[in-house]
Image (cartoon, rainbow, N blue to C red; front, side):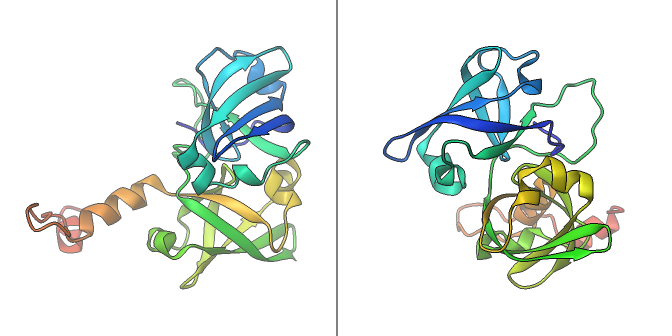
Length: 216
């Protein structure tokens, strides 16, 4: 589990691509301070397992499902990536619950300055659009952000200067692809309120009326 607060930017030192698999070696500093074999580190929002490490770099494997559903396959040597260690149970929780399980990808269609902020309009895949609402949360390349506008196929988010300077999103622009993880709560609520497709499964008793009746 992660918070979407990026700890540092890492650099791809080597990348070994197979048939829908990748072995990444990433240089880093802060996230290696207490690393152990088997630890989880989010790389551009994708939860990956540390398979080896030194004092200045670590290695992770990317399996076929992750290869197909994320932008990790687009990385090259010297690419910069967002890094975050799994959240500590006793630490501050500054973002929102981020699992590191990417739901899909998006494409930046507009980037514009707005006073001290930078607005990004991002086109999304149709199957994840139902999970977004105004002022809801989204993880973009692992960065926890607030949704400020929603259309039938885009969302708009805003970056403050600090976020733009310390994440990979600040360096991206129109045409670049990003990893998208929808808000976990939104996905569960949507699933509970969706009618069952299988005839042999009982229909959920959860509904909007039920939620309102019980104070939600």
